[in-house]
Image 1 (cartoon, one colour):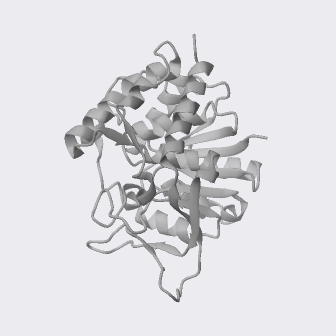
Image 2 (tube, one colour):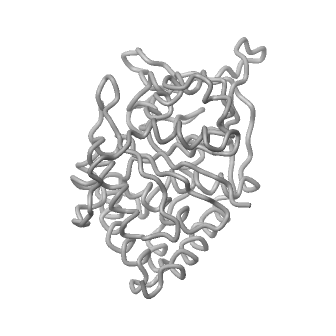
Length: 316
């Protein structure tokens, strides 16, 4: 039986790549895709989710949730890297929903409809999930698992020296989710940074005659250019896509139970994830943290999943 999942995303080319895989993966039943502000502002994130789903036209259309701003606003703007729309400014047309439901309501509805069956895959800031838990205090115990892309354990951040982007965007919500009575798996930057999709990856994409291939061949080249210009990398990181593989193929990931929290106020450390790894820890373990992965098998799985998605959209 396919696993029910909600993808909470802030697209972004990386989230878009993960959606191309998830929406056609027979192991997953994507019951909803909820937008959250992060890589792009909330309104653009909502539009991007709708555009991606419309472009891909999957066999089962998920519910779509609309993003709203975090209480303190978004502290980061990444549009200088990936374009005004976060997808390389390729001008994707979309029929926007006239009365979209808020993302946190969609999350509450779908989890309540299938208690202890839905996995939340959080690929952006944790704004929506914290709001859903605030809206329905019983929800944390009804979620099967939350798989979170975010934070660091022992490495540096990617938006400040101490903080990873997703957590930094809304540290108050991240702390609320970390401290919630839910089952959680964290896939931190230390691990996702070990996977680089080199230029050869572009040659392995599905053919342009497929909907998935045509879409990815439009949005990925600008991301490769941005990585090369900004950081001198001959490839791109795909943090969110790696996190999705951790959901479908957990056997390629090593984990450890840890006690984690989020710094919400530090002048230099706001958004940092802190773990009690002392010899005699005083904090109680509250999540499973990925500590290692088989990078080669993860890349092969990404290529395999995209090839399958391409076959599903050939001639459409």
